[in-house]
Image (cartoon, rainbow, N blue to C red):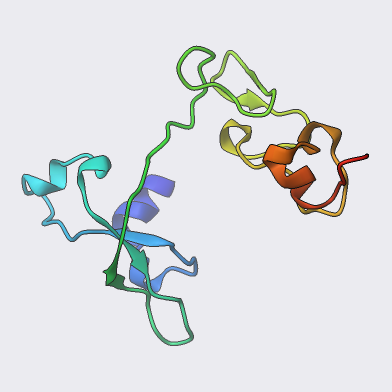
Amino acid sequence: EIVNYLNNDFHGYWSIFEVAFFSEPVLVNSQSDAAVPSKLQWFAATKKSEGRYQEEDFSQKLDVTFLCNICNDGTNPCFYGGSCLSDGTCDCINGSTGILCRVAPVQNGLCNPYFNKVEFNYDGGDCCIDT
């Protein structure tokens, strides 16, 4: 059902979602359409506002890095102590969440001992050096 929606009904201009960036324009079914995303130039998106759709802001070029969301202990491990499961997903621990456990639970009002280190700014300020 999702494939049908994306192929027939979805259009980014009319989406209820807000996007952060756009790629450079490509012509559908052309040689540039076959390019991998990492070979394209990416631009920041304009802010979404009532009655207007978002567009590329060609004055704001972005450097992007694409990450695979399937974990592998050797080449694409889970972050913050998470474990890679046999289905390629991560079992997140220490309060981290998201794909590959990349979202650290900092600045959430709780002092998390795992993130109470200088490199995490003492859990985003939720902890202090002595806790």
